Length: 421
Image 1 (tube, rainbow, N blue to C red):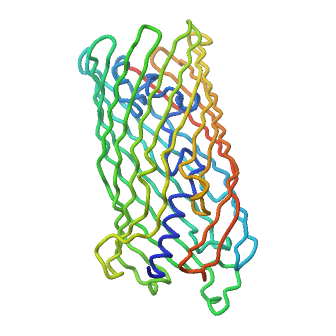
Image 2 (image 1 turned 180 degrees about the vertical axis):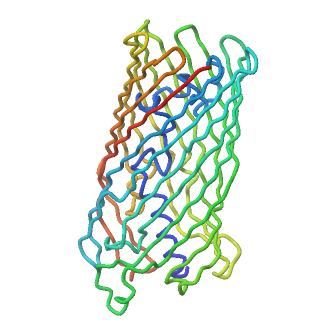
Image 3 (image 1 turned 30 degrees about the horizontal axis):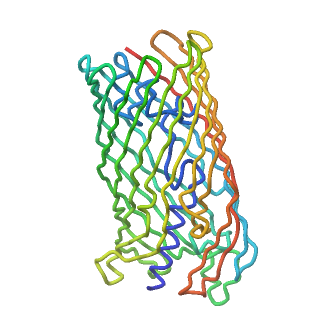
């Protein structure tokens, strides 16, 4: 394996792994509506508050009345720190290196008949952005990254009878990303000192791809409901260019395959009385499909994918339970708690993948401004277990080794407006 490939591997792995504490596991985002945020997204595949319900289960379209429009945004403020020691350059740390973000959404639904309802969703299931800078003495293992996706998702829900509904939709995913690694700016590099702070490797690209989703809902009786949904995997071939010192500062064409994993949810909703309801869900994401990274850079002398780095992630599970309390005809309060398991075990956790378990604590409220307009807000605090990490390359000991620990927490706040015609 060439040094070019190794450097690219470090950069890409950093890009995918660093931000995983910012939302859900890996670079997955759960934040599709402020309505769901207020209950820690508990029971989503069985809930139908507004047109946003189709993004988690298209079968829930059949529970919506009239033409509906829902739009909103969630502000994500991750505070993630890394502290440790590089064997060559000594103690180093970086703080708050995962960028803040605003995640917008828009949804529309319209009944076609008394059994069929169509809808369209604009949102995202995956995204992240980080920047460690070059003051971090382990920046040669990756110092900047972004994965950005936007989905256009038309759906159809059909009510088979009073108890059973089904739904399906297609997902058009537009993705782009950039990944970089650099020599540290504040470390003693000997003969390489004039190159301190320079990019070793930078790669960016974009691609569009198709996926699909499907779901069903079973209305057991007037007060109890179960929903099941599934989103397919989507493969993105991010095609663009690579540059940096490792390429003699030339711009070379290249492509990286990133698979957005499949996921599924089973959820339940239970109306206990006129005021109280409880809801719960279990989510699964197929992160075990992320076994390795492969890149295709023709300038390396081959048109076949090159094995860059083995990752050996594992499937992730999310458990959530929430409550809804109808205070008055106009005001509803929500709360929820969720536990999001890590997508990597202790043996595979490194500085570039500070993946760990997360706990969500959420509160929210909805207010019926009028018969047609509803306003919702949600607030969540996420805290993650401190996680040890290390980074090294056995074939290239000249890179040294970094050992440290990641820690952090995340704040999320969102608003949603929904209108029924």
